[in-house]
Image (cartoon, rainbow, N blue to C red; front, side, top):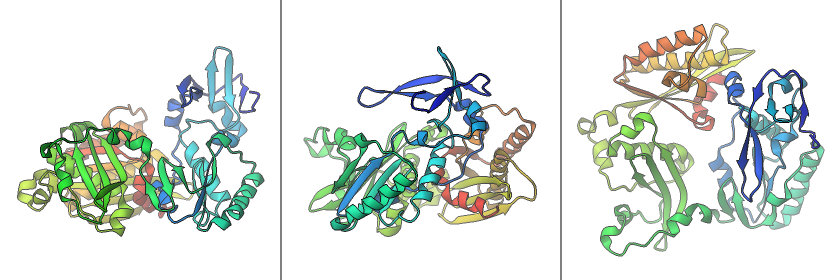
Length: 435
């Protein structure tokens, strides 16, 4: 209360519980369990920047300064009408937040919108911002002081404070968004590869990974590995006889994915890697190394079975005061994207728009010839309700679920997966064309 972040409240509209989470360094962070409130809130569709593009943009800069906002979200004040909704109960009474707390569904999007607006003249030129992580970059060392002065003037104007303990000024390299960035580009983070470095070296040729025997010299190579519950890959580059890791990708297998055959898991690892590292795949020739006959399987539809026939569906719904619509991207087994932007002729809530997008997308995919379909949505509510983890109580939601159940029966295989908003950017952009 002394900091002005919370105040006592007598008649709250929502009540949440307090959860204490340990922080590095032995400190504790007080968090509020806003899960019930988040389920009732519409999603803010404001896009977050792509982390890989932000990190790549630091290459070639002689000096960098990494900055972290002090209690970033708390620097945005809440509307007085909304304070009653972010209330929590303690042994000493009931309180509500005056400033925006951590844990709210749209807190990240709100903060990103703020920093994008105030740093708009600098972003891409000498500043990169991802929520409360800021980086000032200078191609020439002599320009860095001027770049910092420009950035500090913006921070001063909007009264944003930094956390000195997490800032580093005028360095040639450092950690940004979990990556080690330097003038040469991205380097492996020692903390993240410690387990690999500490691994025992093979003592005979039989212990050497088969994938390492045929690395293409000079080109990035993703090495694919599958496990009963996880698929992973590492993008490496070989220079001077040494393998230089560039990027690590992994995915925990959920539901039906855990029952995939080994060859399907390797194919899934390749799909996940290609999506996550899209800028690399578009800019460089890529060679794939794995100890499974992936190429032969993909090249023979008669032996690949369902592996060759899986269709992908990305959907997103959008609802604003200007109108509502759906963005749909159907990806054929050959990798061709069929894109659709559909404007609704009726008013729809955010959740209704998400359901409409999924229903329409499933119908279009079936009519196009899909019989094995993987659907992707960034709406946690819709995905959980379709999976049966959440119960739908509203009449219109129940009707939508019935439509989806009927459509699922038309497919030999159907699965819906929740993905982060940044991985659903194309469908999101298409849905906004209809506003």
